[in-house]
Amino acid sequence: MSSLFWIICWDYGFFPITSTTEEAIIEALRKQFIGQKIGISDIGRYLEKIPVIIGGAKQSFSAHLERVDPPTTFTVDTHTIFRVSSEKDFNKPSLVQGDSILEPLPTAELDELVTFQITFNPQKLDFYYMEIYKSLVGIPKEEILLEVISLLTPFEKKEKWSQQYYQTVLPALLTTASKAPVIVFGGDPGTGKTALATSMGVALAQKLGEKVHFKHLGLMMRGMGYQGRASSMIVKLFEQVKKDYIKHKEPIILFFDEAEAIVGSREQTDSSSGAQENLAIVDSIIIGVDSLRKGLQARVVALFATNLTKRIDPALLRRSYYYQFKRPDEKARQMLFESSLQGMKFNKYDIDRLVEATKPKTIDGKEIAFTPSDIVELIISRALNEAIQANQPVSVESLLSFCQKTTPTGALL
Ligand SMILES: Nc1ncnc2c1ncn2[C@@H]1O[C@H](COP(=O)(O)OP(=O)(O)OP(=O)(O)O)[C@@H](O)[C@H]1O
Ligand SMILES: [Mg+2]
Image (cartoon, rainbow, N blue to C red; front, side, top):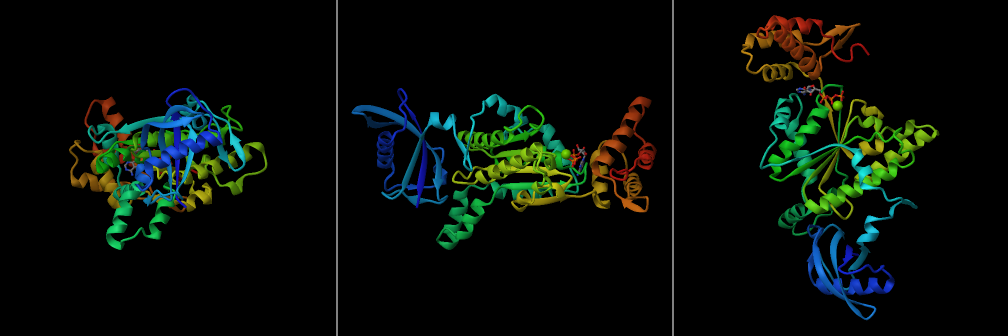
């Protein structure tokens, strides 16, 4: 059974939605749409001044299409279900999670959850983030980008393709449409997870030719006075993100860094109230990521980064595309030195010496490789600072001596 879910707003005054007003609104909406084809690309459609008689008086309302079910094109007929809710109801109360009704939350509090946000504009690419993105080596950046693009592909495009090649909407398409758009970056500290997550929006905006919104969520509500409310804030946050999406219809990346602290496995929790709260947080994030696809087909990707993949809740991992970030091999180290030492006039022989000097070190009988951040931040940066202090160019000897002095991350753990 197909259904359309509308948010309505009265043009004059406020009338609660009772069974009579609801019937009148639905009748008026149905009149506008009967016989028309409608699909998820219509979500966000806005109709103004729809006339309706309420209690014998002429009234009018505007309506905005919030959800379409199923997420495929269908013709509106007398069996199509119309659901309506007033804007007031929508903004104010009830986000239903299980049986409980969650409290409304002020926007200011939600804003606190977003620690950093930026919009990448394809018309004016951000040089700083572009440089970070370009500087990352030894990561399958293009593959990850394509994966994100596929998760952000509008359903109508898939539907068109399916009609073109199979003359029908393939059932498999509906499965892809309901797949939660989740990506997890796992791997050792200092391998570029945060750097890639934060900078990939710029490459994405360039590839898609549209604006991309990036929101870094600092879910540090534990111990910050939100006790007992964290999970309702998360549900509300996802609702807000969906509303934002309806407004601009541009892709959004939600980034959860240090994800093991946010979506840690529920199996490891005990019965203390803090642990119960963690459990509720994980639940609400899972509900949130699933909800991104229900009806709305919001082009939102939830990205998680962690250096403790084993601690991530399996229910979240099961919904994710997973990428393991690795410590650089010889080829990646060579690229790293070449790109980081650009302009410093080192020749191929110098680079080869540095690549050799940063091969894995044997510590307590274990072979441990350098991470990219060891090389960039502990070797190159220090050699650079040393040269600045000595007021002379960076020498390969200084770089080699820092290679010698530096212990790969993880060796001391
Ligand atoms: N693959 C890489 N290529 C080039 N530079 C890198 C790479 N990975 C890390 N770096 C350098 O190391 C810095 C730190 O990396 P980043 O913070 O992204 O690591 P992380 O994987 O998020 O680590 P953690 O798990 O500790 O959060 C980056 O800003 C960058 O300078
Ligand atoms: Mg990080």
